Length: 398
Image 1: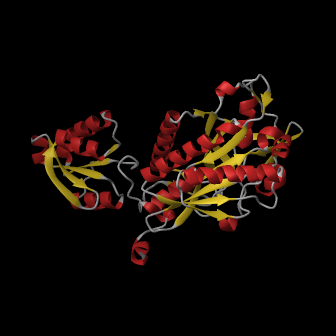
Image 2 (image 1 turned 30 degrees about the vertical axis):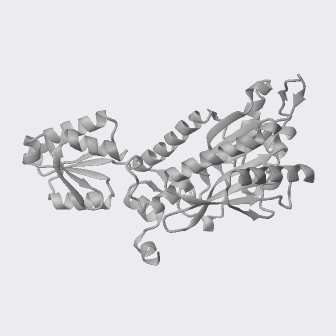
Image 3 (image 1 turned 90 degrees about the horizontal axis):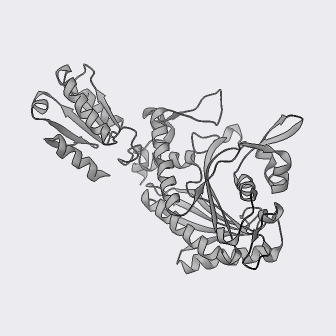
């Protein structure tokens, strides 16, 4: 394990070598994503959106900045104010959001709700800002601006158990999709909690009962819950066995009451819903940093910024190479062509350094035979094959 760790590079070095992201003094803690990094990020977000749509979530977007009075009402002003950024507009104080939950609450309140609409699952890829000390900033792992994959579910009290169980299933699906194992932690009432103790005890018992019913092994982290409710935290284990806290499920009886969120029950009476805060990636930036190091920059085929690189022996194969590139792009693959007047050995070595999943080498013989010489990442030579056969190979990779 130690030797494996030595051979690996940090996500910051890999990010630079693979042209994924950069950081600049002009915006400390606020990363700049380069075209390759945006591709990886978009693929993560596309997968997230697809699976959330299938699971019955509705995507929303809420403002990045709201009035100070709203943050005072939510409790963030008292419990989180030192980590927030502020501004003054039209003779009023505003705060840039450090998290998206109050925006989801206001979205819920925008019109009257019926019990028939619950559970109502709002999902948001929300850009948030938090003030971190300059000495703690670390690439994508510790930043001041990042995108949280938040979801806020409004549910009747009797529906909490099933909803939390479904969330655990969704989180398991995501982490196993990336090849992660994970540990689970139940975090209980902190010292600066809001609300009544009996409500906290009920919330903690509910979360614990779901974990037991699902047969999930977990530890208890006493006093580490959010100020508004207990939570289940998920710590993923990367390929080096390192633990990273990413996902969370938080039960909140407080905020819906503070904002007077209500729904009309079957008996035509008004009730407060319970709010479940939930994240899976945690933040896109941090999750990307973990993935970069987990894969050592060698992303699986579906995530790779460049999936196939076409390498030409010389200019005589350029027209055929362009046809191959066009055919692959029509099928939705991300393709580059290296038509430089460099030796093919150099081109192959550079492709390996950039961790390209597949390289298609084209010389005169391949051009004349409507074929390509296929090389798979890791200096694996798959031999010469017809272009249709090569396409079938990478389709199986997906």
